[in-house]
Image (cartoon, rainbow over all chains, first blue to last red; front, side, top):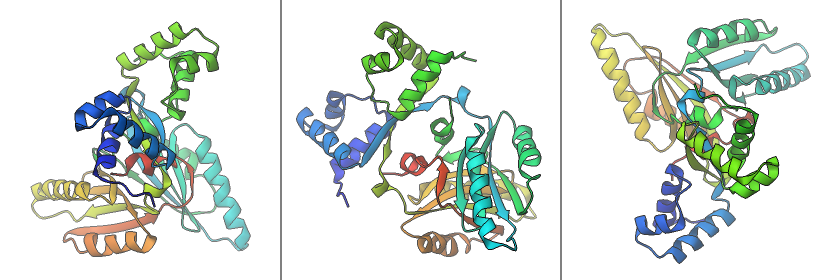
Length: 160
Length: 160
């Protein structure tokens, strides 16, 4: 486990806010020499504390409405089929641009984040594309409204 | 609405993968002059298509277990109380480091992403901190297991 000290954390917090900050800007903000900041960032990258740098897309390119979808499959007579069925749905969902995130949830479930231009679109997608799938025990859609924390999530996830 | 053409999208896709790419690296990858790439990125920033640049933290700093939590409050006798109660829980959850994301869900609900060192920890948090809250009608916790899409989400959300 890479040990982080206060300076490492301060650097990471600044880069999380704005990864384009230069070494000298960070050095000035934190009152430390540029050589120190340079060395620390190099180490943070080498140790994979910073895995990668990315961009967050603006409001205009994010879906206006968002919902968390939970699916649970009915346990079939042939157990082996469940695994294949879940894997198939997960892969299919992952290919759709309005599916921002999708993961398995336990042995028989799937959890996904669905975006759309409006709540009607999100609900329509679930009704027309998901609820028609055979073999589902449970389909639940929870709206995601005002974010208190993690608001940038859609700007990070959205495809271009 | 900012109109994006194929070149804009190609630039955005490259920067999503690695926002440290230089203008000349992008120019070479896309077979376009550096001046064109420079101009396009400037425009993408000005038009807030690129809202900001950030870092994704590595595996080691991400929670090992993850769950989506849905809470629904019981509608109280005094309606005004519901709004204040939900707002209070949302704000309190947002302050906890293991709560990676929290948002309102409809009028009477809250949806959150909870991280922990193990699934026991995530469940323990919900049992000891959430289920004891008065006035809840429903508490559901869905595990988030193997990601098929959106795996970087925790590396984006996690606090340092």
